[in-house]
Image 1 (cartoon, helix red, strand yellow):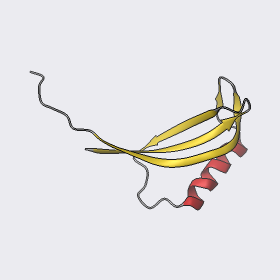
Image 2 (cartoon, one colour):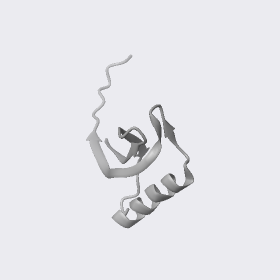
Image 3 (cartoon, rainbow, N blue to C red):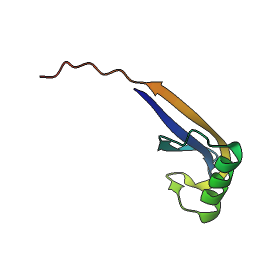
Length: 74
């Protein structure tokens, strides 16, 4: 099974990186849509971190990982 996760990366007030993850992102996401969503998150001041509020966009990426489960439990 392939698991995809959209990672939105921000810098907080202390300058450290904070990542917000969303599982199963749309396949047709564009750079513009992701940037607009990240700008809305910053403008809304919705999230904070232990080292301060989110302050700037650091990047975004989709991470995919393949998981193979074995049937070993009885």
